[in-house]
Amino acid sequence: MPLVLSALVWMNRNWVFFRFGTRTFPSLLAKFMVALSVSFHCNNSCHPSPPAHLLKENGVDLFSHVGFCFEVDIIISRHVQSLSDCYDPLDPNGNITITFDTHKWTDDGYVARVTIQNYYQYRHVEKQGWKLGWTWAKDEVIWSMSGAFATQQGNCSSFIFQTPHSCLKNPVIVDLEPTAAPENMTEDCCHGGILSAWAIIPSNSFSSFEIIVGNLEGNTHGNKPLNLTLMAPGPGYTCSPIEDTDPTVSLVIGGEEKSKFSVRTWKSTCSYSTFLSNKVPVCCVSLSTFYSPTITTCPQCSCGCRDANPSTDSCIREGSSLSQLSSSGKLDIVQCTDHMCPIRVHWHVKNNYMSHWRVKLTISNYNLAKNYSDWNILVQHPGFSQNTTTYSFNSTALPTVGFADEIALFWGVTFYNNELLHADDKKLGSVTTEILLGKDSNSFTLNGGWAFPRRIYFNGENCEMPLPDTYPMLPNGSSTQKLTHPQFFLLLLCLTVKVLAIWL
Image 1 (cartoon, rainbow, N blue to C red):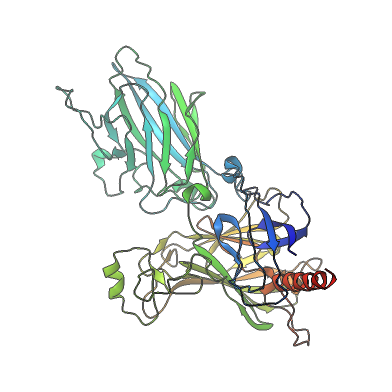
Image 2: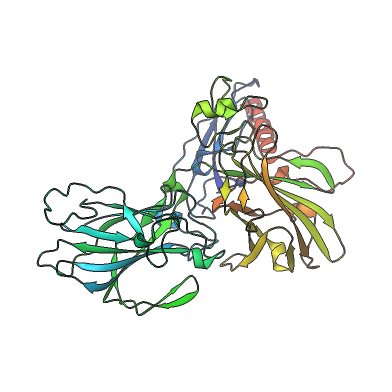
């Protein structure tokens, strides 16, 4: 007789709680609501079965390699809340704001300055840079630009006496390089599309360009552009409709107030969503301590699983020639590992003193072709509420909203370790620092995994954390290994089914 069990799983990326019966529950990040309906059919004899997989966010396996004797049917219902998906609880006010300031009118249009301001505390726009696009409401053309350029000119054959810079209905604009000719530059332009995070270098978190718009005929005031899009540098950003706002009188950019007067101002805000970018995880976390020989490695298949076929080029195996890399033509191929992540963050609890404790933080690059310039790492841990000293990285504390744990942001020192180099056939690219944290006698403990971070982000992307029951444990004089949560759950279930089978 089949036994039907309904279970709900509360998924907070790495923590899993089983509840018998049917309950509703919120995900901590309010991204997905996941319900599992599990049916177990027992034939009174245990036999090897394929591994069961419980899924977590973005379809990544929560745990695997659990063999048991039941047939499992899992029905998953996802309700995606797009607005909450764009909301980052660690950076609630983060966005990229696009501002169109019209400075003067022309005979057939207007002259405007467009400013792209990154208000994300720790998410920057890296190499390849931003691409800004929109759709003209009428038949507007771009007569000329400075500080940026349109990627395509379009069909301008109808203009005889003067050729516009771009006649496309939906132009795409990109930034100029810092080496651009002076006559093509304007104030606050030309960073190659790179925008620093607001909390790291505010003065480099924005870029501007000037644009002369024409061909408006009788409508000299023009219409707001439609369907604003932002690639920074890839997908994932959703922009609000452009709206009229009060004309800019003064503008605070990069922490400095600049006099900017306009006769009309349009604005749009763009928010990032990992779900929309369709990214697999890009980093994972491993843990170790001075008091335990156990090293908790990154969860298996954190960023994907390696192909069993050695002839494929999904990764470069140890000992293989790097000529395979050039022949593959890929720029993001990684070394073959169990986790398959380009980036691994290792947190090592190094020492415990009377008034403070010491951590060694190491970031390793497994990518064989890509360097990470101006990288940053965000760590959530209650220990950052005390005095903290960082030796080889820059660091700052970020304000928290609704979190008891403190948040610290780390980034490299310019001309020293602000570029995380790629791996080669001899060693990984890596950067490391030691962190000295003061002790709060009321909260500090080495029990229960307190010394390990709650969450880690690399370049704004959430890193896969190990399950808490795999953390290094304090020595307790016992060699008996405790059952993990999945093992205990399956053992209890198997015993229950056997008892029912005897009764029935």
